[in-house]
Image (cartoon, rainbow, N blue to C red; front, side):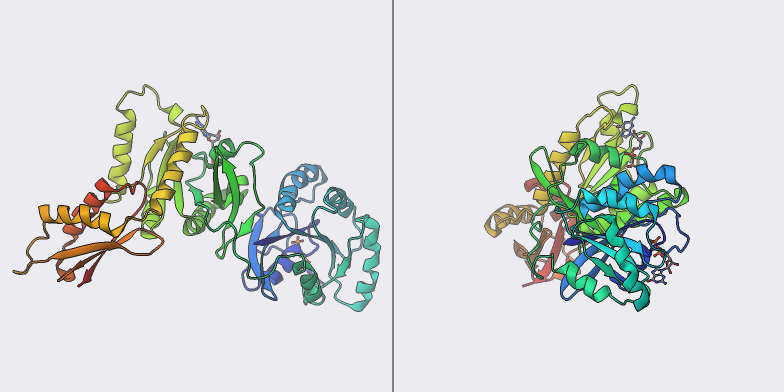
Length: 439
Ligand code: GDP
Ligand code: GDP
C-alpha cells in the first residue's frame, strides 16, 4: 500500500491533517506542541485508493539542540518509508526558521519521491494568496497547496494530486504470498536487538513499508536467503518514549501485530522465564490459529548450563502454556550471536508447516490405521465409526473426520487423533483443527 508521510515543524497542523486523512480513526491529538508522541500510523482512502499515513508529530521538540538529532533519525525514517511526502508549513505564521531546516533535509529527496509543500491554516482566501512566500524554501518544482486542515478546504485537490502518484486502485498485493512474521514479547526481552542482528544495520528493506487492512504495518525484508514480511517493524524500530505507557503500549501493538501475522515469534528473557502476559499472548495466538515460535533470548545470562538446562527450561515453558504443546522453543543469545540464524530457519519451517497440505489418500492411509488400532470409545451404547478424513481447503490446517455420530466423539479422542496426526505429519509450531462431520 502507498504511504504518505506528513513532516514539518511542531504546531503547523500535522496531526489535524492526519486525523482528517484517516477519517474517524483517531490519533492521540495533542494540541500542546513539543509533547513527545509516538509516530502515528493510520489508514485512509481517496477515490478508491487506499493509503497509509504517517504523522511525524512528536519527533521534533521545540528545543533547537535536540532538533538536529531527532530530525535526522525519525523524520528521515518516515520520509524513507513514504511514497509521498507532505511538507507542512503554517500559512498563518509564515516562514519559520525550522521550516528551512526541514527544507534542507527534503531537498535531497527531490526527484526521488513526490514532495508536496502544504501551506496549512489557509482558512481564508487572503492567506491562501499569501502562501507563495514558501516558494522561497527552494524545493524546486514543488507545488504549494494552500489548505485548511481544520475546515478541509483545499484538501480534496491535495489528495487528487497525491493519489495521482499511486498505482492503479485494486492492484494485487504483490507480497501476499510471503510469510508474515510478528516479533512480540514484553519490553526489554531483546526484540529490537534480535531484529537488528537478523537484518543487519542497513536492514535490507526490499520494499517500503506498506499498510495492511488492520492497524499494523509491515515491510518486506530478506535475511539469510529468506524473504518475509515483518509486521509492525515500526514498533521495533522505535521505542515508546512515554515510560509509564510502555507496557500497555507494547501490548496493544502486540495484539495488532499478532492478528496480522502468520507466525508469531514470542521472545522471552531467559533470566525471567515465561510470565503471565507471555502465556496470555500465546493462548491468543493459538486461538487465532497462528504459527508460534518461542525464542528464549539472553541465554548467555544463564550460568552453569548443563546438558539438561535447556530441556528443563523448555519443560517449564510447556507446563505453563499447556495444553498448547506444539510451539518449538529455540534458545538464543542475540548478544553472542548464538542460534539467531537457526531461529529464522525454525520460523520459516513453522510457516511452511502452516501451509502444509496432506493429500487425502495419504491422510486416510495413515489415520484409518490409527483409528482401527484405537477406535472411538462406545458412548451411550453407540459405536462411533470414522469413515474417512480430508483436509479442508482453509488457510490453516483443519481436518474433517466424517463419521456416523460426530456428536459422540469425546475431547479425549480428538486429542488422541491430533497427537497421531502430529506424529505422522510435521505440524511443529502450528495449531491444527479437527472437525467431526456427519456422513
Ligand atoms: P502538529 O504539531 O503539527 O501535529 O499540529 P496540530 O495538528 O497539533 O495543530 C496545532 C494547532 O494548530 C492546533 O491548535 C490546531 O487546532 C491548529 N490547526 C491545525 N490545522 C489548522 C487549520 O487548518 N487552521 C487553523 N486556524 N488552525 C489549525
Ligand atoms: P526490546 O525492548 O524487546 O526491543 O529489547 P531490546 O532489544 O532493546 O533489548 C533490551 C536489552 O537487552 C538491551 O540492553 C540489550 O542490549 C539486551 N539484550 C538483548 N539481547 C540480549 C542477549 O542475548 N543477552 C544479553 N545479556 N542481553 C541482551
